Image (cartoon, rainbow, N blue to C red; front, top):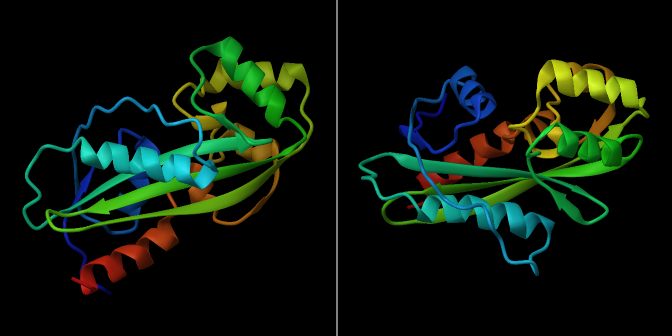
Length: 192
């Protein structure tokens, strides 16, 4: 297997941390504080790449031999970007929009060292079955999806019963396009 550099992972997402760990990547968590605000004229994939890069630009630590990894996942339905819900009411509104429809999940990833940077994204289409208001309410009360874009996790109850099918990378919907990342970082480190 390819030997990868040590990663500096700037993500509080437990899903991203677990996915990288399970894939055999060695990383240290770094805390970056950046307001996730983006210009309105950006298109879907531009939004997630802009936000991933914004986070990377807020890193003020030492790189050493490590590669900084930042990421941002957004959910888009009918060209409306949906972020994380602030409360149960917002979560209900978001899930009601996704209910019975197809939405897109975009994850932007930024790889950065002291000398170079690469930003890429992955897109997946997610199709939801129609759900009743009671089912949506049950989900919000029992799974509290307030730290998730679009107010749901594909790896929990909503994914088990609510998602009809996915076109594209499953792990991208979880918040990190692992197989693309694996290839991108190989390319990044072998082309100085």
